[in-house]
Length: 292
Length: 89
Image (cartoon, rainbow over all chains, first blue to last red; front, top):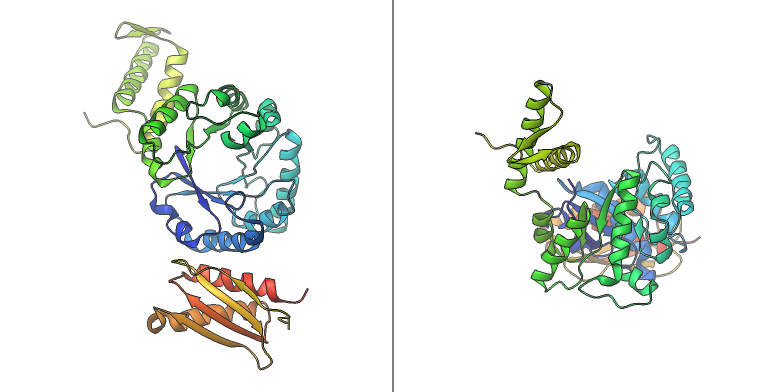
């Protein structure tokens, strides 16, 4: 279950070494924007050693590498791929060809390091207008792609508009990314809410993202992690209702009926599908059925 | 053997980091360590630094480490970075 993803600069040891105690489901060790060009080499080695030696118990490790239009991306992959982090995040992904370029190079590294084919997965960062328009092709370009991630800051710049708390400027991109990711059968993650001192704003922003269908949300501050986790966790009432739905439909099927009502509302296939998603999420979080 | 051909630094003086200065030396490897935990971890820090120098077959380095409570993986990363910045080729 990946509800929250916390960005940590790949050049700062005191943030990296505490990565598994911030409460997020995943950490994103950043070799890109958080690292100045003259420290790229140091960050790459530091992140490699940290992944190799620290374990990061109970937290997924994602590495944001540098983009394909930089001289760093191959060196980043050379260092990181052999460690097989949970995901690699290529930024500024604009096309299926970008994914295929990464796919081919990662495939070479997997072979050279005796790794299982396609063991390294990708979460492309979509943060350009072209990337948004090509989102479905990106999501379905390779079986390595397991999720899409929206980057609102760079996207706003590419759209020639100001990034706001309300987020109207990225609304189309959010909806398009959710649709593209779901059509391709992959997960989808929302952009960080960047005002780290606005405790109400993060809750509203996360709730809106959840309502659109996002799987979870990234954060640039540990302060936002608990709010994101709470919003993207099913509530006790939702979990209990989901179990009631499954019990009702199971009983109906046993009686040879395909349709049944629960509390006066018809249970059909989409309701059952949502109930199954809720139960899967709850059980992944250890919030399954309460003893009755 | 690979040679250190110029001076290089890596790391910072921030908490949990180590600042590394590497310069060429004529008389084999010399390692100097400053650390508030020198009594407890001085030997471990030295061994980590030596291991990285050995990994890169460096035998002419003067290495100074100013430790701010860095973990082993951080010490090794900073020494490796300095070596790669300072060595020939």
